[in-house]
Image (cartoon, one colour):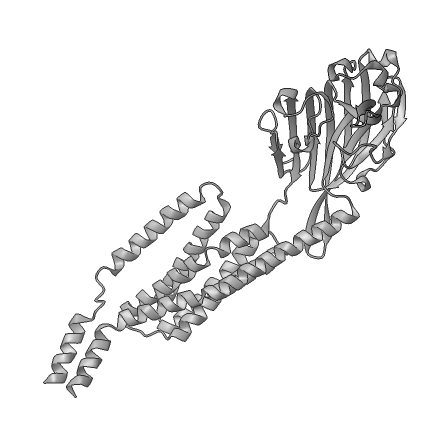
Length: 451
């Protein structure tokens, strides 16, 4: 009989510890649905990318303009080990002295199923000039320099984006581009046209103009092949990203009506020369340009919010645990699981609703539904509206706090850490007087039992 009393006394004194261990275990268990939700968000995001590729395959992909480059064949004689002279045709490359690109980018939104894909049309004017050609600088003999077979190359990623016949105005003459490039050592995908370079043209500055109407998806980039490259672009798109090897000269002016951006790059800013032969340079690595970001990337924000799921569940379970102690009302582990599932379903609601409406609206709807559900359930558990409303208010504040963190970028860690510190401090303050071991009530019950 005494052993039984001691066991009951031990369980009574340690009931909060035992319940705390159970609650902690349930928190870990609830990580399982959180992991499934994260996989679901990733799956939907990948589906959006697949749709974007599908739309791009029918419209045109991301475009990068490279050039124009002036390519001149030359002959190189090589003597083999048997003394035989072999003549090979190779290519010398010359880049523009000045290159100016002006354009306007007109974005469009293409709808496929529930997904929105950003595509564009552009009107581009490319102007510039080539300095007099100096074959001696490349150690090419005049007799081996075949300027009469020179051609102009320009790199374009996706030919499907070319809307009109593409021509180049070379001094007073006009030439029509053809698909493909005779030499792919520098430009692997592009257009070319032969031009007439006589001795007089070699010795003077040659000017060119290209008018281009080009379609593409999401990104438009340029390669700074000019000794001085200047680019000016404008667009009504209000959410651009300026990326690549070079940023605009000044902070681009982005307003509700769009943006204007200017670049100026010198040849000293890149790692390839103005002319060369017998070498390969990855000039595409120096590209820069504009990416059309979606106004709201709901999947990235949903993924960020899911990463706070363990925080939601731990704090909610912790608050329930404290209320359970203070109100002396037992909450069954199954009821904890139901609350955890309600918190998890919040993210599926957020994900599914944000695919149809703006993320902020979806967040408000999912938060309202979840807070109402758990508030009503809390009322049923403790049978007190005061506790239910207090708990609902705290949960709403927590959702609001997480929403602010999602909107922040650089300051999310700082403000999140400060907020969690304050929250833990409040919990520690109100839990300091809890009789965790039940010493008072436990001792009284033991005395009664032994007497």
